[in-house]
Image 1 (cartoon, rainbow, N blue to C red):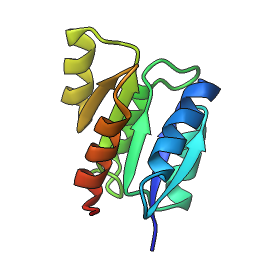
Image 2: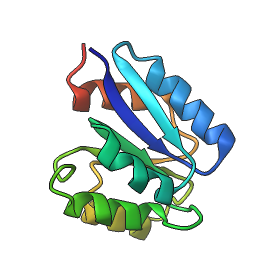
Image 3: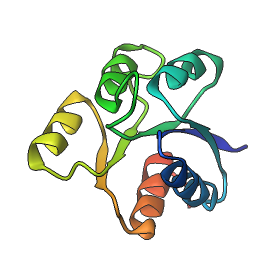
Image 4: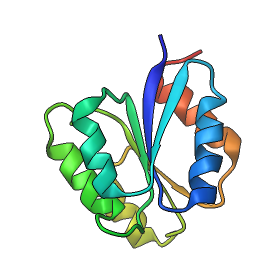
Length: 124
């Protein structure tokens, strides 16, 4: 059985890059969307084991999305990663304070994402 990971990223290139890395880990299926609004529509229809989001997006930004997800009883305990270009300490602190489990700054080492996915999803 494959676990589902939701990727919310408005940049097509970043979305495809992250999805390729996620699906490169055996046992994971990536579901991608380009906006926070679309992500909110997908959450009730699927069971995601992990969510990856950017911060800077049109409509609902990543921090607003995290806030919503962490208030939803079905997703409160689902690990959430932020992958963003925002590298300032205050951005990182805010994302983690809202409930993100991990905060990666673009560009990041592909191996670090794979390692985090395996650890949080308890994959070999």
